[in-house]
Length: 268
Image 1 (tube, helix red, strand yellow):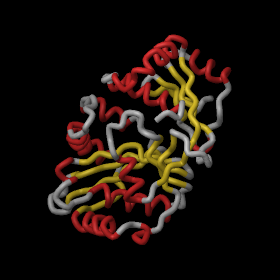
Image 2: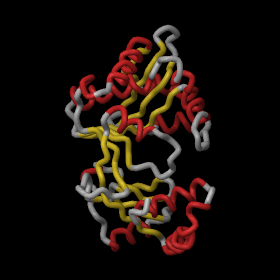
Image 3: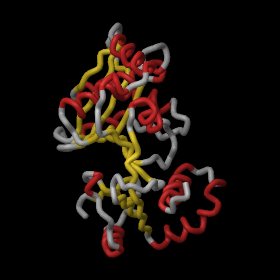
């Protein structure tokens, strides 16, 4: 129970994904009584054999260049020719990351709130040094930061928590994400022998195509799991009332909650 933390109004599990178990109704009630959250999200039966509507996007093996298509191999090689790809320290991200963060957010299909530089720095500074690692791409000619990844790291798994790139480098033959992903996959899966790397659960906001990109280009796969959601009474009432009209609702936050409910029902 101590591995559940409040995140954007919901109690979510922040321990090892493959160790989360099915909560009892009493445990869900206890979490909701802590206050501050309107729901509990419980993902269990990790990597089950059934094709459920909810999953983690994971990669648990590394096959080098041989596992990639010829087109993707060429893009990785191009990225490694044009960019310096390496692990960086927290200080480097604090100095250069905010500019890339803003440019990336401005380019999203679904607009997101851009936090101020002070808030951005506070988030990075709050990361425990033994729980987070940072990777980045730099333009070899100009030396400026092009893209970065923030990774939450445990003893045997890694969560690729955040990807950001200057949009202009997504064009022009730089392919920063191709180089970044190849090098990180190699490092964590081959060099450090992690059980898996992953990019979180199925997206409920659908603001990015990163997960389909990982599956199509880098041989990530869906580790299906079962989804249980517990609501405070008033939120349960609202969700059940709005659910039949979910496709008509334009508010992104409300739609995300209803999308998650549809996934719980295996209806999406």
